Length: 297
Image (cartoon, rainbow, N blue to C red; front, side):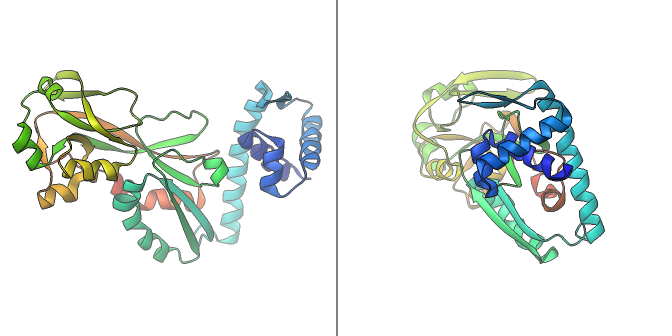
């Protein structure tokens, strides 16, 4: 096995966290994978993995080798693609992951134009309001909203999503319109169930107020929360891109327009190395779609 193949196998085992899973993914026998990793360690004269009966983790040398190997493989693949002319004519499968509402409103509308530019690329989109396992699902590029929790992934911030308060006119007619964040304690909220606390932080002209909110409806889907807000179930603290159609048709209106929440960062994430090939081309293709305006009043 040459050095490039050895590094690819090492990266796959490290990402999978298991010899058996890596072997299954590659269609190899576990003894073959174990032997090849042992040969790599022997050639480097260094132990790359800490092995126990229950877990597999990288040694300090393994962590250093992982970072260098990922960069070397990325450079090698770029050089190979350039030599073959594939840097300008990408081919094969591009697998993308994002939450369903972003897929519907932001990512999806740009896919057709990308595929017309690159007719030899096939696109597979995974929409899941829980975070997809990038390694297990073979995802090339994922888009994630909010703070990142998985430090093992490579990430690049590609935008920010302004957020503000919205409600259905019928809800405001029935319950009144809050004038200050402290009034929110007297109102129902529709909330993401993934949020660690029921605390909304709003700012105006240098003043910041944190308030505990509550409500009878929670969901992991932005689309479901949007529908709940339209149906008058409560106030919705939301990104402007998610509610824009509802604001245009009058089913939602801005509440306390002088108050805004901290924008949510948007990252594209991938498993290792440099962002390259089809994934980089797609990230560049939709970059302008991820630049959002301040919510309308």
